[in-house]
Image (tube, rainbow, N blue to C red; front, side, top):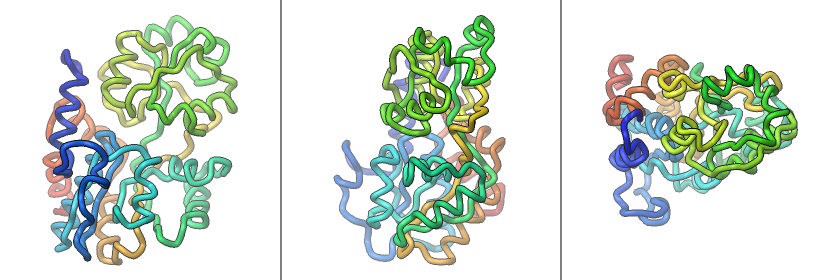
Length: 302
């Protein structure tokens, strides 16, 4: 990501990762439905989620299932309904963000409370499997010189400065509770401007590094936070909650044996490992499928 043309390189990498054969548009629209009995693994449109989707697909294939992949599709606003309708069988999710989507007014903040709320509020067509110890939270990030100059440690420190600052994030973060809505309601932050970029990807990273935005929303497992010397601000009001990686499945499409396969992946992952695997894909430009397979084999899961 440090090289010139980082966005172009990353886009090329993503294109090579996707399990979709269509030439553009939403793969759920451009491809026919999977054959009966096939488990269709989907993912959101950012590299970590693609990597997790590859893990699910490889492990399920190794367990004897016929698997189709439709990765890098889009945001939660696009893909959640596809799992509910059965166009996708399984999706890597994050429990806190999923709850904020299902019920933006739910105030659950602990792991047990979030999972209990999801269990009660998800439709019967969906099931949440066992959350992983691996966690990836949305994180408000600034450049080190900004943090040093303005003595920024917490998101709360941005409140008096925000009317003079620009903020970059994915387009949907403008209206998400775990986005601008929550930052305003909990911290009183009102940025001067919002720049719609990508989902914690190369566009956002480059915009922050180049000073095109003053603050940005990245993921806590984004390896460039360390490599670029960015500063992640603490979240004392817990706007971003718990964000454990967890498989979301269509209840009818994923049987108990397949659920066990997916739960074993979750149990073997932790936050440090996920960050390291992200580095291999996002900075070292390794193929996500190769990285996923290497890790699964190292854990005896493939």
